[in-house]
Image 1 (spheres, rainbow, N blue to C red):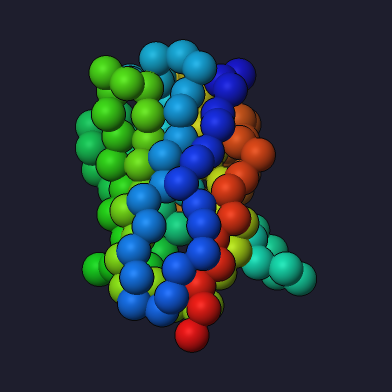
Image 2: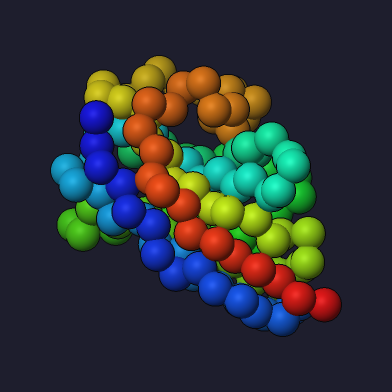
Length: 130
């Protein structure tokens, strides 16, 4: 398994932006499928965005056109750029990895589900005030 450490969370007003980072302990390119998840108090963990090694991405409808997932393979770092934040985006955000090896191409439902992922970070809190 790969060790994952998230950073970049914080408190922001509605309409603001944050960029989350996830540092991986190993080179993840071509061996892992990466994703961002979030969990609000009293709710189940939900997939936010995912990215394959070929750069293909998947987004939850609730964040499409506001969030962007990317990765810097040279730095073994995954990012989540979050714009136009809303109070309902408030949650603990987790980075996750599926692999090795990288799983076969997944449907959006599979990619945003927790089952394929076998490595998880500790999370970083994002709080959006109105």
